[in-house]
Length: 243
Image (cartoon, rainbow, N blue to C red; front, side, top):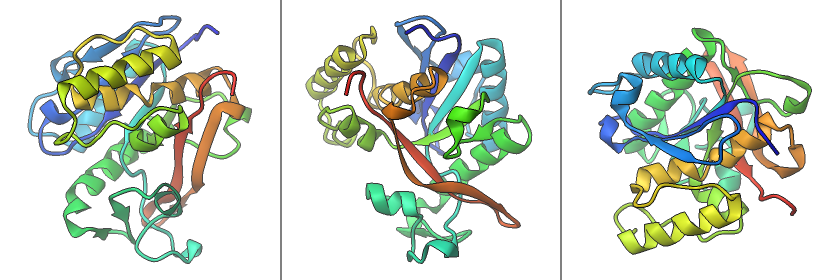
């Protein structure tokens, strides 16, 4: 099925743009591209407002219909009754847990999670991208979507990519080939760990653009807009075609 919009996926990092993975799939193309920070006009140190503006500018110039981000979109809500984390994080057992505004577990995740929430915030409020809601098939919007690569590998029926410290070049290449097999896309050889982690979430964007709700696995609940900003939200994972 052809797409009439492009997809941009980001494996986020907050200290150095060299640790960020950018994967891009142009409308109607099956050739994944890995972008350098320079392509988006980004220079260190990372800044959430600047990154959001760069993603928006690239998105508008390249007909992007979905931006996929590996990072929290909002803080924990007291409505769930779950301690220390959002509902989506409990369901998917994420390593970083987003607590009430300004708190995380473990505590050293706070700079990264705060950075991610700020990127979502600027894309939503300043650049008019929409957070994913449970009734998304009823709408045609430019989506900004939270993803979790570890779970994306699993829902696609593939072995998850080990952590960066444990993933050898051979393992990364094996996972790249398996992702090619499942998606039918061409993925450049010798990707970095960050690039491949971004690429595995690209099917989420294809599902949204092609309006295939049966292929989307949502964990969590609709984002809650409050005086503290955004709370909770969905983490989206893809299912392969024909399942």
